[in-house]
Length: 68
Image 1 (cartoon, rainbow, N blue to C red):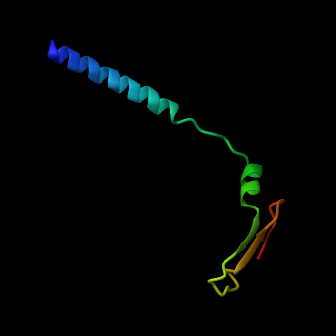
Image 2: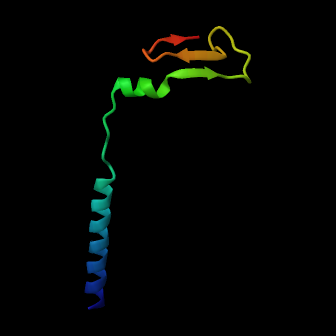
């Protein structure tokens, strides 16, 4: 009787975990426009002197244009 209860409880816990896991894996589709909106702005690294390939200041415009 104890074994039957234990197996029943373990199966119930396993089913709950599987259902919870399948609900938590929903994926959201994002567009390129959403990404550009999130990263637009002026980025300045004052601790770095800057160079030709790694500038100190980067400006990302809302239309996706990047200026160094």
